[in-house]
Image 1 (cartoon, rainbow over the protein chains, first blue to last red):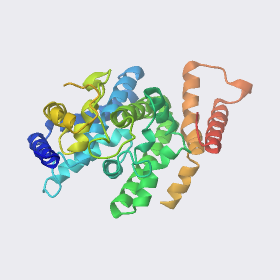
Image 2 (image 1 turned 90 degrees about the vertical axis):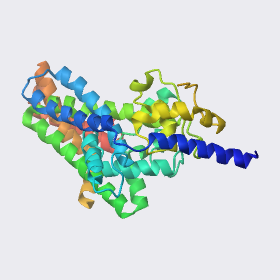
Image 3 (image 1 turned 45 degrees about the vertical axis):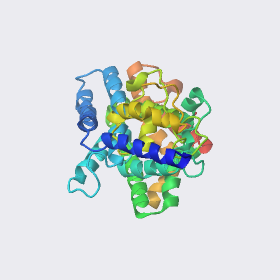
Length: 290
Length: 63
């Protein structure tokens, strides 16, 4: 077999394996997304009435906000219900409801995330490029840098959507601004109503911690060192010290970039089956055997 | 939309007055710390929150 035939055969095998993991309704992700947001909403009356202590609110709310992104991420790729179906609204509902605690509008997240897939590791075009850093400590610091009011990282999503200029991008930009306005209005109103500490531990501080976690594990770690572009080199597999659960499945992020419609919960199994092909493709697998 | 965008440019200053100030008040009250310079707690919190926000607006960064 010549090399072109080898490549074609690898592609055929790769697609056949991926097809086994695509499709179906990812119930766990749906319960995760909706259930997590329900718990977070329930925290508000429990905290404001003093039924649970502030330290417990802080721990649970932080977990809620950290967990809020990934179910929406599956919805961004229309994994719950495919676009064109009469029931696609269920996909959109899960996407909107699950990501709400993070104060990232669903349509903003979708437009910028799909842009990330199209332009991964492109310094000029990848909306997530500002999370890149030479090492883990620098990446953690970068997440803080990117939240400073005058930083280019903070303005990146807005700049990307403005430059894109499509109706969907304009809607995403509007949603993002409205979401931010709503968030800061709630913070201020609650604070002046006498619930400043409560709203700080329910939403403000948990969101900061979650943004650091999400930027580190969902953006920096799977793309580091982020110097190459192209289907098989723009992301990697890696072994996390926090394990697969602690890194929220991001060890297998390479599977997601190759086949974005495989649900998060199926990427480990898909990776194990795809691994020999990914090795043959020259992917960076970071010693992740299983 | 333009008004919202313009308001966001002064975001840190508004944030200092609208959120940090009442948060400072609440923390001060809970800790029962004395308010410096014989100021009322509200005045102290508005000055502190507003100043932090103004500095962050000017520098383009909180830390």
